[in-house]
Image 1 (tube, rainbow, N blue to C red):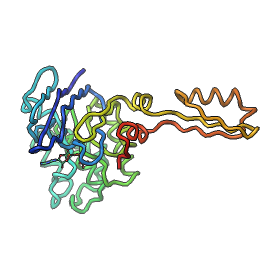
Image 2 (tube, rainbow, N blue to C red; image 1 turned 180 degrees about the vertical axis):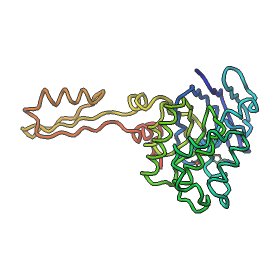
Image 3 (cartoon, protein in one colour; image 1 turned 45 degrees about the horizontal axis):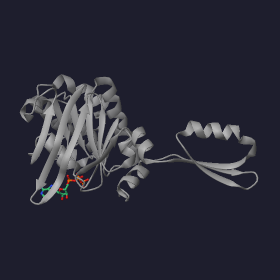
Length: 277
Ligand SMILES: Nc1ncnc2c1ncn2[C@@H]1O[C@H](COP(=O)(O)OP(=O)(O)OP(=O)(O)O)[C@@H](O)[C@H]1O
């Protein structure tokens, strides 16, 4: 079921077109990535979707037919790139203030448990590590019980373990509650958490598909064989199962091999001719 759709969404700042006729569909319960390098137009897109920026042209439709952001604002949660929490207050005060605003204090304990906030509950927000801050930011955005959560660069600046942890929690949450998640990222490996990826470059949508679909369209899986005779052979395969078949059929004659599956780096490189970072 469609939860959010845009048609030819465009934002111009003066002469500069930051978002250029982007059409997206976000289906309920899915994890969707907007992937692109710095300055691609990801934050500008998100800011239009959450009603912070007015599109120059194009349309945003929430649910069946609502085009008025006021009708769906209560159904969305947002985690911005830069936290909006009060750094002088404790985690508890930040979270409880939000809960009071939405009369949703019943929801708090479950979020405290899920995001492991107990040990930092009485600590000032300013004193937390980057990963702890991000856990609090996300928990706070979920207090109102949104259907759709927007995360703008949720793990930029975090170490790999913290990133993995945050993605584990988000994935679990989505499976348990059917929450729909839209996130922006310039980390190729992070985009692989998504069910569907929109690749944006210089304001334009340049490709969209599942991870498997993008890899199939824009990358090659390479198997390189070295035979006992010293002869080498390179082949392009559809998937790793084909590689396993060839290797087992020719095992007696093979001295060595290398299998290199297509990656999201290859996808981006093939689409844009440049690396993402
Ligand atoms: N308020 C603004 N006024 C003028 N130009 C802007 C404004 N906001 C964004 N831009 C420009 O629009 C383009 C897209 O910016 P945006 O922040 O959406 O990119 P992004 O993909 O989110 O990048 P990042 O990963 O660095 O956050 C950039 O060229 C940026 O300089």
